[in-house]
Image (cartoon, rainbow, N blue to C red; front, side, top):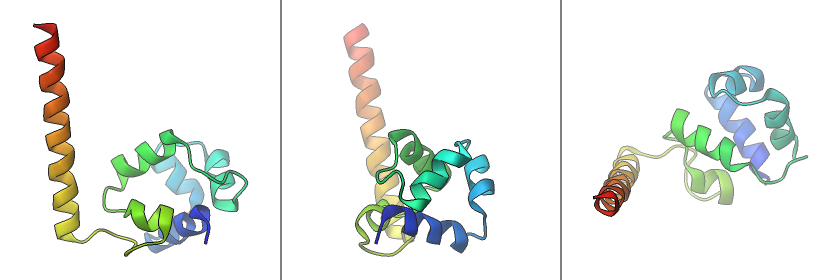
Length: 100
């Protein structure tokens, strides 16, 4: 199953239209439509970043590989948030140590 089909399933699951979804994440509706139709096989890094930012419980393993559930459970979500926070802290620490 294509990524676009799974993303379309998610959009329907949350009760949105593709147009409203694109607008809500500040993404071009036509470009999103190309992903949903399969014209664009792989989503851009911009779309992925916006999905992560605006829909953090969307399971990217499900979206890309059809593994697991559509949404992250509480434990998975907390684990990812901790890992992201640890990564951000390390990046900032390195940046400020380099600039000092």
